[in-house]
Image (cartoon, rainbow, N blue to C red; front, top):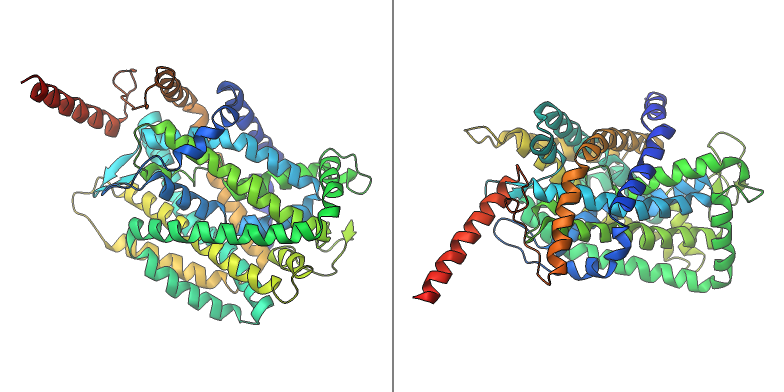
Length: 494
């Protein structure tokens, strides 16, 4: 099974996809005049710009929901695997992927907001919606929804739970099966409560887990501050093949840096647009900027902190499993969360393994919540036109996910990552095609936002005024607002 999945990944994650990710981000950066730099301050301000409603969630809740997914196992274990197979230079290419990916995230999130709909009193949006409305390709939208539902509920959860069960076993000696049972019970309590309960849980857990993890990272880095300058030089030299030890694996550095960078922030995959599409904002570009900011938080801050911890403490090997290692610092240790546990243990003995295990549990849990919401939104899209509402498909989806979570807790780490890569890569190919075809509408929305900002206005999206078609929700909102304003003017004049 593992050999088959790895063979498939060789095609899905060929160098073509790696360079498409970089090229797409570069294209969007140039086309938007490096929006990710120009609007950096505004990104942070917009996080707290909106409030939740009966239909949608706030910008902060949307950020928490997407960060709950982005700041997951990829932040701790994914960085370790990037270093293990790509060398220290892979970290640089994770940074590059993040910088360009911020702009890609802006485009896909803005599109998700523009083409969102309201189902059963709740906002829904994401690639299936912007593919169907923007491209008028219903079959393509259905295909993406089916693939994403399977990937998010069955394939991707495996990486998260497997890493947790492994770290719990390493820290506390807890059997993976026990970890799986606990995860199933707690996850079930939340996902059976709908998007509001998921958003509230993410809003509470994400800041706590992020701040606590960063504090420990800083402690480890300060204890090894004398090693930091050398590590930074090593990262840059390795990224361009200028280091004697890692000069022969520059291709692996780029490939693994981009692959794990994408796994960490998911910019361009489409998976991080579903939650943000439910945000209550006055203009789609606002949520696009918020999600661009979340890419920075995940990769440039948290992934970098993990990478620096592992590298300054020397808790890593480099090379392919089963072959002679280029660097062998820690013996026969499978790359993953254990590298991060060992790094913290060098400074905080007896604390590192338990802390990372608990952190990883929180990271994985909020990621699973986001995965479920993505799957549920795809199911809602597939069933949106049914006259009679059926509840049983959502229950089947929930049961399928908890079964996958339990199974994932006991399967091998290598297989879990391979299946996750297959799923993520499959979604990426479909979403990238849609993004390229919908670039023009996204740029049009940005131009409208910037035009209103120049006039000193708080941007409000009115698709009719700028000749934007098929933004059904926003068209109704504009009509209702215009009608309300007219009534107010009549009252004032009378």
